Structures are given as C-alpha cells and as structure tokens.
Image 1 (tube, rainbow, N blue to C red):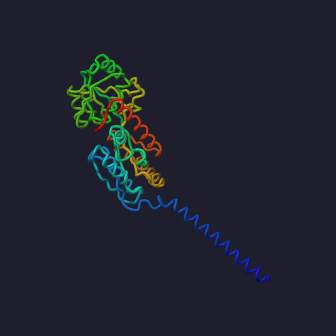
Image 2 (cartoon, one colour):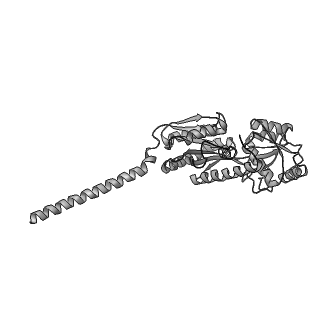
Amino acid sequence: MWHVIDVLRHSARRLDRRVIAATATAVALALVATLSPAAAFPERPIRVIIPLPPGGAVDIVARLLQPHLEKALGKPLIIENKAGASGIVGAATVATADPDGHTLLLVPTTFTINAAVHQKLPFDPIKSFEPIAIVGRNSLMILVNPKVQAKNLKELAALAKAKPGALNYATPGASSQAHLLLELWSSQAGIKMQHIPYRGGAPAVLATVTGEADMTLISPTASLTQIESKTLRALATGGATREEQLPDVPTTAEAGFPDFKALQWIGLLATAGTPQPIIDRLNIEVQRALQIPEVKARLAEQGMTVAGGPTSDFRALIEAEVKQWTDVARKANIRVE
C-alpha cells in the first residue's frame, strides 16, 4: 500500500512540473507574440510613398532621412513618388497597404486640406492611418506689393475694409493652403478680398512683384530674394517666433492677430492597424535622425525647423487641422468637384 502511495506522490510531482513547464511556455509564447512585431521589424525593404512629383520639399526631406533610417533599421528605404489628384492617389496606396509598417506615407499639410475640400476621398485621413512623427515645420509670410498702402496687418485690414473687394491675393492654386489661410485671415479681420489662383508658388510671387496681385502668402525661403530687394514687403510671419533671417518682421500674433497661424509641416504615417510597437520604433528612429546636426542644417536650408515629438502630437494636429480646414472651406465655399 505504501508503495502505491509513493507512486502517486511521484506522479503528482511530475504532473506539477509539467503544469509549471506548460504555463511557463505559454507565458513565454505570449511575451514573444507581444514583442515580435517590433523585434522582427523590418523584415524586408520599406517603401516610403511620396504622393507628389520628385524635386519638392517632401522629396528632399525623404532623401535626407533615407540613409540614417536605413542604417538604424538595417533595411533599404525605397522612395517612390506616386503623384496624382493633389496627393490622393499616393495616400490611397498606403491606406490600403498591409498594416505591417513596410509601406509608409510622407506628406505635407495638403494631406489634411484634401479632407476639407474634396467631397469624397477613398480613405479617411484620421481613421485610415497611424501617425508616426512630424518631421519638420516652416512658417508662411504675408507679403504685399510695395505700392499697397499698408505697412502692417492692421493697416492692411483697414485698407480692405475701406475698399471692400478691391484688394486681391495670389495663391499657388485654388483650394491650396494659402487660399484657405487667407480666407481664414479675411474672416478674422472682417474683410473680403478677391482670390487669384496661379499654377504654383513662383507665379504667385511674380504676380505680386509685378502688381498683378496685391498680396500673397508664401514661405520666407521662396520669397527672401524679393523681400531683400524690396520688390515685396513682408507684413508678418505665421509662426510662433520671428524668422532668423528676417528679425524685423513681426509674427501675426505681434501684428494683432493672435488666433491666426500660418504653418506648413511634413509628417510620416503608416497604414491604420500597424502594431503600436512598430509605430513606436519608427517614431524613435525618426526623432534620432532629426537630432543629427547635418539633418538639422539641411532642414534649415529648406526653411524648416525640426519637429519630432510623440505620435499623439501628430494625431492631435491632424484632427485639429481637418476640423479647421473643413470649417474654412465651408464658410468660403471652397471645394474641388
């Protein structure tokens, strides 16, 4: 009988060990499953879709980050320009990609504007993407032809009120960011001006220099030569601080319009559903790259300052801008058919 009891005790101990071993294995597998998306990422080259033609600021930023991210991630970054429909074609490619972090989207501010001016998009700018990081920002400046009798924003608003509809402004195109921003400023100032759309920023600047248009809104980098030669007068910059190259030009807040900001940004996104560990790793590697002195210097050459920050900041920015642009577009009746 005692022999039988000993056998049972021994069997119980063996069973306990098996249970413990099985439990430990299950825990280990669960842990591996939790860590594996980031640990195994990336498994192949990463495509970075730029929904615009080659040669622009977004393209330059992508190629600036490319070697640093390739080194950090251990895989090639394939930069692919997929232009069409104001960036919608390229964005749709990423919106429908596998959510594994191997297809990314690098976009400018027009990403949020499209949601406001297009009646229907093949994706949702908020729900179809996972924000990774804002790469850089730059401010825009309100510029006038020297013949315009206004030395600051308040004088410009007073001039427009005295002559309703007489002043006009040039933009890089209908439904562009400059178009929406100047309609926003007009609303805040209580004025009405005429919009003249051009095919790009350079023609809009030229039209303002020649007097074909009274004013425009453009980056300081694109207009510095004209400002220095006094063929354009800078009234205000839309950033939080004054431009280093133009320290005498006040911010819009200093000029009496604290609620008006004019900023552009470039940011990186992934497909919705991409595992958070992958998003977090990409965010960390982008921020590390942005701290490299060479990267900072090259961004400064493009008139941009390093942004970075957590993914939550980028998500909040997208949500706020979609709402803002939608409100402006509705009030000014701006839409793309």
